[in-house]
Image (cartoon, rainbow, N blue to C red; front, side, top):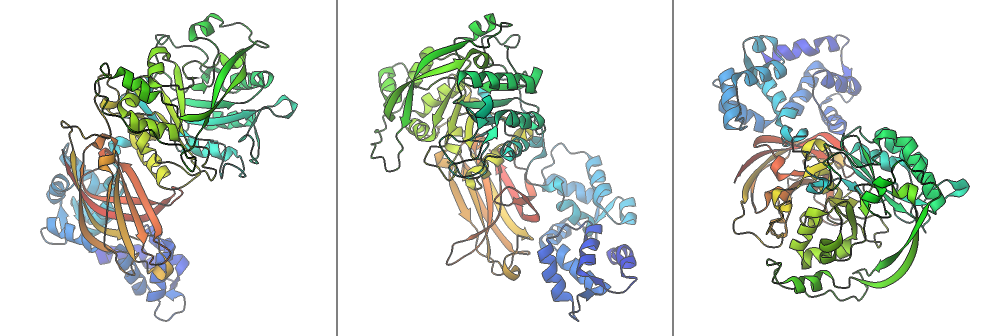
Length: 637
């Protein structure tokens, strides 16, 4: 039956005799077979018996069988087929309920799957499924590891902005290093396309009264400010309809700040939020209330109430000056600075208030200087809910910080605070938007691990989007959730004002998740030399410190095309709400280290159970389809 179908599909392509590699690839595409061109070239070469670069219909059938043959899928099919040839509709129903955990199941789902994936017409009409159809279903998007309920906005978007993790970038204009590399609009475009919702713009005085964007005091190239915001305006809401925050690193003179204000108003028009929303005069609005809005994050003169009283007035030419204590961060690397000793548990706020004030108020900086800053009132009045306020201590913020004021904290200082006062950090981020940015020593645009700051509820953990690696894999994986909208609702324990959560201490009343992953096989992994990679897979959990763990498979020698592992890994995850899981395929290297082949990262709670396909992505985050892993997932709580 399947042979008859196959010959019917391909015979016309062989009317002229043999076909070339190029035609063979097109014929595979016609048959809806995804394949890696390099793999096909090796298989074509091995099956071209006369070595003429042209193959017969029988040789093509052999190539087709090699590419589509999946012993592991055959085993599953045979388990549920009554005659090892056909799945009846009731057999498919049983498979979906027992293996794929389709809990909200109805019989029509099985019928729809048959109609969608069964290629043999007479089998489809009989409401049955051949192995060819079953294999196509198992290779489809419906059997991906990522739960499709997380593929759209499903979370409550009516909480205040402080209740969300917000996809954020650092020095968004850079596409290379921090000292010499070019500034490019592509940095903003690519970040927005990925769902980034907080962009950084470093603004400096330019010639002819035109502000420019670049990394000050370096040799990076310059962009016109107006060109940058025009690009942002074009791409701001392509990936997400939720608000975009423009975090201005403002070094401009008052006159050029006025130019910036005029450009922002002219470019964004009504999308620029320059007033408080109804019902949100004394509290932060939600992403839902701010749909399709642009927010300016910058220093601001005076209170929000004073700004509203000036509404409608012409602020051009009006400048305010204030003194700011500028702090030069004492880096941990080679600075000789002694890290303060951690102090005890901070569970009892009132009893240990003096101790807390001492800890969170410790001098984390060595050098200070007073700077007089002039702010254009025209630009200042465009800052509504995202005023930048210098962080001094948690105690100071608790007493004096206003709801619309946010902090930017360097990674070194933030890391010390996570270690010394994690719970106080969480209580702070519950009330105020907090942005963490890379330290100045990262001239190569490297990134820190964002997980440690998500663990204490930091909303804007800003990374260099242009730099591939584990931190950006985690960033991309985390914001797969909630429809790639750039906003992910924080777990309840990071939003509750009475929280006792501390990422460094496992709670007795925690609700851990036991996760079992059976790594079955690999599918057309990115090939190394002559398709002979020595392949292995690492499965790693990122989360609170006690949940950081990884396990590695054995090495399958000289097989990147269809390696079989059949190994089982088990993880007990104490805080699954914060956990990410990362799958990495590598080619074992004995001298130069392992070669990266592909990876996939996603939130643990966004995983489907059952037989699932794990798509692989390159270092730069590009899809490597059809390269993937085939696994079985089971978890209980």
